[in-house]
Length: 449
Image (tube, rainbow, N blue to C red; front, top):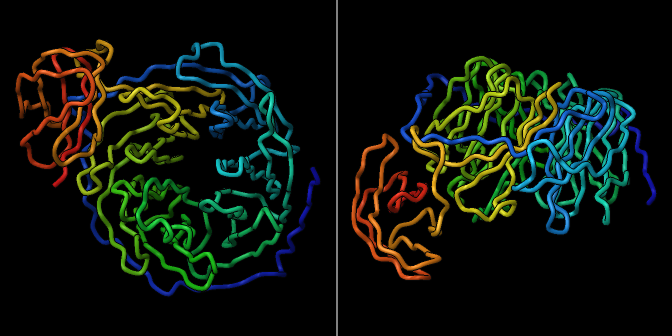
C-alpha cells in the first residue's frame, strides 16, 4: 500500500482562535478514598517484559476478527504485538510480531471501526498503520511529519480523522487519514497544551454532540474546541491539566474527568460546553500519569502508587473502590465487555515501564473472601428500575441478600428460581448495591427511579 509523507510547515496553514468563555473552579467537593465493604480482587492473567528489555510506556488493545491483541511501545523504537485472552497463562503471552518506529513513540491510539493503529513519536512524526489479516500485523499506510515532537494522538469519533498535539506548544493538528488533509490550530491565551482527552461513549443518546468537540489539557485547565476550530471554552482547575477522559456514565450527558498537576482529579458536566459545571474531585497521593474509563469505572494511574479505581456509574455519587499497585503505571486500558462474557469480570492492560506489560483481571469480593463459588446466574439489566431479571442456568431455591456500599444488609428474602428468566420485584431506594444468592459470588446492581 502506498505510504504518503506529508510535511507540516509551522508558519503555514495556521489558524488562530481565542477562548470565548472561561469557567473558574473556586472550591472542591472531595470524595473520600476509604475502602468500601466490598473490594475488587486483582489477578495477573499474563505478564511480559519487552523482548528488547525496553521501557514500556504505552499499551493499546486491538480487536480483529473476534480475537484480541495488545500492542506495546518500547523506548527502543519498537512496537510489539501479543495475542491475549481471558484464560491466557500468566507467563506465556503469545507473541505475534513487531514493527520498528525509527524514533521513540510517545503515544498511541486505536480506531476499531477502520482498524487503524496510530502512533506519535518524539521527532514529531505521526504514523498510521492498518491492522492486517492473517498473522496479526501492522502495515504502515500514512505518515505525517511536523517540526516538533508529538505529545498525544487521539482518534475523533467514528471518522477517518485524528487529532494530535505538537510537543511543548499551543498548537493542535487536526488531520484526515483518508484525504491526507491537515490544519494547525493555535489556541491563544491557554499556555501549553499537554494532552488530548480520549473519549469513551457507549449508547449515548446525543452522541452527535461529542464528535463536534475536541478536548485538551492545558496550562490553563480543560480546553474544549469545536472541530471547525471557530470557538473555544476553558474550565480552569487551578493547575495545569496533563491527562483525562471524556465519557457518558448515564448514557445521556457528556462528562470530562481531568487530572490536574496539584493532584486533584476533577469531574465536569460538559454536554453543552458553554453551560457546563463542576461536580466533584478525588485527591491522588502524588500526581496522575494517565486515565482511562470503560463506561462504569474510572481508573487513574498515580506516578508512584499504581492505579486508583472509582465507580462513576452513578455520576453524582462516585465511589472509590480500590487500588492496584504494581509500582508506577504509565498507561492503562480497559478491555471491552466482549473480551470476556463473564458478567462479573473486568479486564485491563497496564504499561509498567521497565517491568513490561500486564493483563489484569478484576472481580468483586467481600473484604474477607478471596475466592467465590462459580456463578450460575446472570443479572440483567444491572442498572434497573423494576423488575430485576435473573437468568438462571438451573432451577434452585436460595436466600437473596442485598447490601449497600457500607456492607449493611438492606434486603433479605427466600426466592425460588426456575431455569431461564425470572423476574424479581425489589423494593429498595435508588442507589448502588451488591446482590448475593446464598454463597454465590456477589453482583453489583444499580437501582434507579
